[in-house]
Amino acid sequence: MSELGNKLIDGSESSLRAFLDNLPGVDKVGAEGRAAMLGTRSIKTTSKARAIDLAISMVDLTTLEGADTPGKVRSLCAKALRPDPRDLTVPHVGAICVYNDMVKVARNYLDSIGGQSIPVAAVSTAFPSGRASMEVKLRDTLDAIESGASEIDMVIDRGAFLSGKFGLVFDEIREIKALCGEKAHLKVILETGELATYDNVRKASYLAMLAGADFIKTSTGKVSPAATPPVVLVMLEAVRDFFALTGKKIGVKPAGGIRTTKDAIKQLVLVNETTGPEWLSPKLFRIGASALLNDLLMQRMKLSNGRYSSANYVTVD
Amino acid sequence: MRIDVMKTYKLYIGGAFPRSESGRSYELKDKKGNFIANPALASRKDLRDAVVAAKAAFSGWSHATAYNRGQILYRMAEMLEGRTEQFVAEIKALEGVSDSVARKQVQDSIDLWVWYAGWSDKISTTSGGTNPIAGPYYNFTIPEPLGVVGVIADEKESLLGLTRGLAPVITSGNTAVLIASERLPLSAISLAEVMATSDLPAGVVNILTGSKSELIPWLASHMEVDGIDLSGADKKLDGEIKKAGTENLKRIYRFEKDASLKRILSFMEYKTVWHPIGI
Figure 1 (spheres, rainbow over the protein chains, first blue to last red):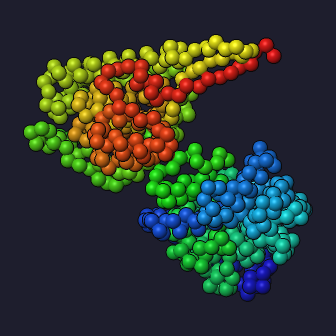
Figure 2: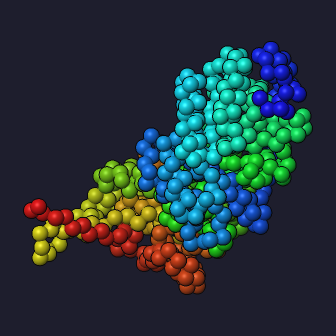
Figure 3: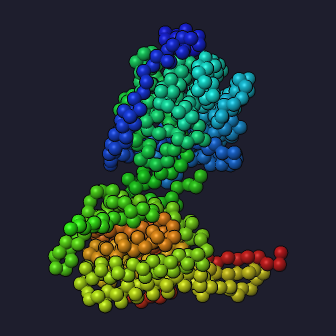
């Protein structure tokens, strides 16, 4: 458990329960209304150009398919470094996100093409269900770190969380965090689509942050709904309040369902209006996506040459 | 006394009938200055949405069997037949022509849909073929649809102009974004209602009403649009449209009134296949 978390709880199941059950409930109508209201903000011209570049730099370019091959991962790495090969002013993406066995492929290839600064994130702990023994989860994580992953995206045990076994979930995150140590950033996936209520999203966010998560992430991308604006708003509020309580800055990563530039810019507005502009950085905000990057690039082309672009001018992933 | 239920003339994008995203509309009057309707004044973003819908529909429509496409076009003719009175009334109101002239126009349009419906499964046979070559190959050429085609509707006879523009484009498997006549848009929206009830998949035809001068430059420069039928555009704009279209080598044509195979083939691309034999 983090030192800061110590101030709020003593690590026992009862202290955890007392803390989480005393969190104020989420005003569902209010949260949805606020997210919808912020979604109507109009971001144009130079602001839009900046938002697009910022969003590109925040993308965790992801491929999590059973059909992934080393070749596909390598081409994704090339795209991560140079999203638009004809325009070198496009920033590189935030990270590459792959399954464990592809970490080495991605790391080696990125290093060989000058992408040393792009981290490789691995989805560990029996992603996406999280249904494996702790021993397997730890081994899985260790395997990813040893292969060169500098970010670990772990899933929580939603079954345990929903049946109120907060201590179990807490200990799992803590153990994985201890394994990551200084070598890897830990992102904790809450899978909000399975948590049923905003209250649960708030509780799970605090639980992950108390246990030492560096980032809290909405979803695996395998469950729908995923990163809806109200869910992200609730998580950002939790991060903001946790910062006020402990002084620790936790990152947020929405993933799943963010496919268009408009969706991405809505997320950035939520960040700016909730946690403030300091979180508008790949260090504290990431967007897990695959198709989004092409739409961002097409919008960028439209801004730079005034013509609506076509999918013929971006890669087929 | 009963209060009239007036029709709201909206756009037709991706199989739905939205208002313009801009919220704008314009006042449409007949030749005598009487109010007729408030059609939507489409913006460039409506055009963008229409192209996205057309692109999304292209794969399904172009891969549907030619026979199936022909059946659907024929179905449109059937639906048009049943709505004859509505089209006659709209044509009379806006074009100021007599009942018999308006009726003739509707009937001619129906016949033209049927004519193009018939070409759907014949065009590749009559225009493609096997090529004699000196080598162990089976070599054949077939015409294939281009993709998304922008159609700028004829200004003269509203329904007939729409049919001349749309039918040859979609019969071969292209999808279309139509910019309706600014002055005569009613038939275009009513035709959308025909399409929505003819099994024509959503997005195969998208119809925008509004200012041609506002929309055409965006259509001409759009990289996702593969061809443009200029027939209803101001001739003075030809140069500008062609220049904007060079960027992605758009096929840009202006047609005479006649119904012809040229109208179909102009928006098709020949593909030649070399297939090894005897190996």
